[in-house]
Amino acid sequence: MERLTEALARGLIEPSHVDRAVRRILSVRSRLGDLAPDPHDDVPPDTLDSLAHRELAREAARQSVVLLRNDGLLPLRPGTRVAVLGPLADTVLTDWYSGTPPYTISPYAGLLGRLPEVTTHPGTDRITLHVGDRAVRHDDGPLALGDTAAEFDVVDWGQDVVALRAVDTGRYVGADDTGALVADRDGPGGWVVRETFRLHHRPDGTALLHHLATGRHVGVAPDGRLSVATGDPAVFTVTLLVDGAAAAAALAAEADVAVVVLGNHPMVNGRETEDRADLALPTGQAELLRAVHAANPRTVLALTSSYPYAVGWAQEHVPAVLWSAHGGQEHGNGLADVLLGAADPGGRLTQTWYADAAELPDLLDYDVIGADATYLYHRGEPLYPFGHGLSYATFDYADLRLSTTTARAGEEVEVSVEVTNTGRRPGTEVVQLYTRQRRSRVKQPLRQLRDFARVTLDPGCAARVTLRLRTADLAWWDETRAAMVVEDAVHSVLVGRSARDIRLAGALTVTGGDATAEPAGSRVGAVR
Image: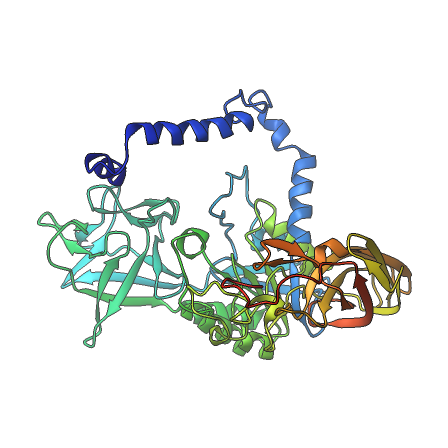
């Protein structure tokens, strides 16, 4: 608004320009029905939270779980004693554009009652803070110095960003509109997140507390209250009461299996305006995983995050690794269904998981072709490829057939394959069809997904799965012609379990395309 006002004052825009822009916005909203009465206004709440809707939410949660690695530890056997550990073990976080769930089931709650013994610990450090000989306390109002120290859990969300949770109330510390620190928040949230800090440790063992939203250090006001609106930063003595990793490891040692639930907080580092410097797990979470695994090698890593992580250590050392996005109200039940084998993990990755951030181009380099980025062009060996996801069953592919080996541009080709469940339990397979154009005037993808199909089979059963290849989808944008073109070319037809796990290959010759476009480079412009 300030910039618009300045532009008006400087004569860069006129009121008529604003009026025209507003008319366009309102016109689109009107055509979309956004200005009409909400048809859901009369729907009662019990309909929205019906048993059918709850089951649908649970099905969506279980279908989204991707099994990345499994050496046989999963599914868990009946009677297994489990410790569910980590900052996301007993919480469900809503994503940036999520609605408000009517209830939430955490991973711990999802397993509770379905196994004989289920314990939990967040794996977070517990501390007290002092300034000189005065303790940081909190009652009903702002944090202040006093005689009795309040205890806080330190939740590590990565890149040295932490949240402080008051132990006695479970509420988070944030800065209010006056700058005073208060422990009355549900958690980090809002467009401006006012509940995150960095602890800047000093050589003498003390620390400064930096408030990220304001960019200021926490100080002490004349009345003893902690605030980011004071002048000088306070020097804190941090006393460790509970080593979170050690406490979690102790529980893991007493259990048959440890399930470590790690990931990100969508409001802290899973949204626009928030970029990561690397692909690593938060330092505290990585240390927690290693401590738990050392105490109990029978460890499952359950990642819940808005994006991939470079978890090479886990892939090498941890028997089982799963991933899902923040799964909504039934996340815990859906995850538990997969862990216990009540459901086969049906999710597949929709992105490449790189082994290291060094494989990625610069953050502001959007030329995926020139940078060999994404599954389309990446030549390295990913940690987990696009389309990856394991089942508790095993599958065999055979007898690849194409309805024709030669097709004209604009036609459709059927590609079929026989899939057999060679495992000992029912399983779900996602059969994926990729193509690669063998010769072209321009750089083509190494592989590109064209179709996929999901099939569920009992042990020993087989099914013929048919996929469709539309030759029109083989077109690419020719900058020299300002048009989409399909070249006369031979395409490899690849069928498999992921972009890197191809089981069968064939060939398709496409004719009748546009082979007369100007050679690439004859005009200045970007050519795919």
